Image (cartoon, rainbow, N blue to C red; front, side):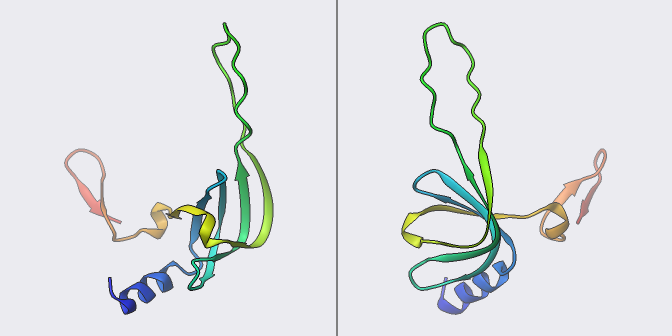
Length: 111
């Protein structure tokens, strides 16, 4: 991918919802606003999600439930050095014309 393709791709992500996972197992979900040469990412209207620490399972205990905690942060800078995964969150209504889906038996339509 050359520089102009990369810039076009980044431009296409503006204001889309990104899900960013960091090295400390936190996940940030917010609107992509900008990035820089150090791979830092700025997100607006951001929620942070954390997994609780793993509980110690005693013998005879069969099920454990882990609840994800969340909090609203607003505008955040996620340091590029800590980012392990970036995902674009899109809904079907945002992906019109990108892929065919099946409707009924043997029929297909492009959204």
